[in-house]
Length: 91
Length: 269
Ligand SMILES: Nc1ncnc2c1ncn2[C@@H]1O[C@H](COP(=O)(O)OP(=O)(O)OP(=O)(O)O)[C@@H](O)[C@H]1O
Ligand SMILES: [Mg+2]
Image (tube, rainbow over all chains, first blue to last red; front, side, top):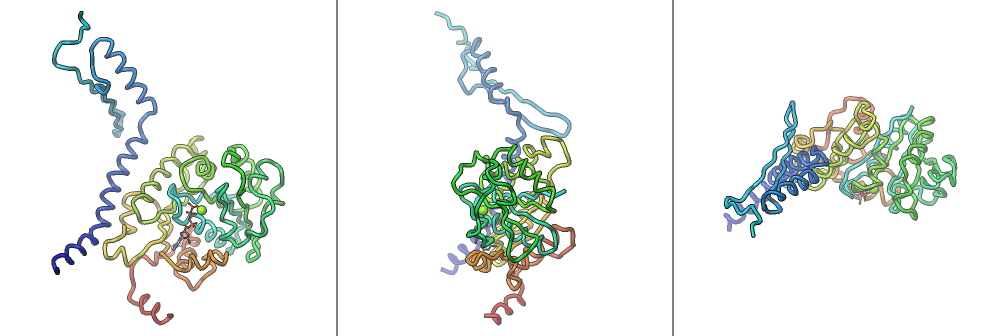
C-alpha cells in the first residue's frame, strides 16, 4: 500500500517531466517540417515516376529528406531498388 | 504612429481575450491612447469582458465594408478616457476580414492612437492570420500544458514567415511570452510545466506569468478587466505585464509558492 502510494506520487511528480520531454520532440519535429521547401512532395512524386519508368519499385521506394545545416541545406534522396533483377517487364 | 500588438496563441481558451482587455486597460490607464479590436468574428466576446456589450451599434466588419465610420463603431470606455473598443461582428463570416480592409482600418487608427491591441481568435486560420499580419509586437499567450506550448511554437513560425514584417523583410515582429493560468503549487510538485520548462522550449522574452486565479472569472462575470482588481493576484500580475511591456524592470511574481502568501491568503479569508 505504502509502496503503491509512493509509486503514484512519483508518477505525479514526473508528469511535468514527461510533458517537457514530449514537447521537446514534438517541437523539434514541427520546426523541421516547417523549414522544408514546399516543393518536396511533388519532387518526390516526380522522381518516383521517373524511376518507375526503368525499375519496378514500390510506391514508397523513394524517400526525400531535407535538413538545414548551418551553412547549407542538404537534400537526401533514398531509393530502394529490389535485389532481384525483375526490372524488365519481359514477356 | 501607433504600435500594433497582437494577442495570439494558436490554442483556444488560454486567456487571449482576458489578456487583451487587461493590457488595453493598463496601457490606457497610463495615459496611452489605446484601442482594442476584437478579431474573433462570429464569436465576439471582448465586449463582454470589457463590459460594453450593450453599447455595440456598429462593428469592425461594418467599418471594413464602409457601412459605418470608425467614430460610429468605436466604443469609449466609461472607466478610462483613453480607451476605445472596436467590437467584432456576431453575424458575418470570417472572410469578411480582408487584408486590405483590415490594413485600411489599422492605418486610420494608427493616426490617432498610441497602441492598437488585436485580440486574435483561436486557431491558425484566416481570422488568426489577419489579426497577426500587421503586428509590430506579438504577445504569445501560453498555458503550461503540452498542446498550448506546441501551438504557441507553431504560431511563432507563422509570425516569422507570414506577417507583414516578414514579407517585407522589415525588422521582425517582437515576440513575447505570457504564461497564463499558472499554478505554482502544481509546478512545485511536478504536475505542471514550469516557467523555465516553457522558456527552454520556446526561448522567448518572458513578459510575465499570470497565476490561475478566481479573480479572472469574477472580473469577467461583471464585465471588468481583471487588471482593475488591484487586490487580486491576477490583477497585479497583469499590472506588472503592462509595466514590463512599457520597458520598466519589474521582478517576476507569482512564480513560486510563498509561505507568506499562503498565510495571508488564509487570513484574508
Ligand atoms: N489566469 C486565469 N485564471 C483563471 N481562469 C482564467 C485565467 N485566464 C483565463 N481564464 C479563463 O479561461 C477562459 C478562457 O479565457 P479567454 O476567453 O480569455 O481565452 P481566449 O484565449 O480568449 O479564448 P478563445 O480562444 O476562445 O478566444 C475563461 O473562462 C477565463 O475566465
Ligand atoms: Mg478570445
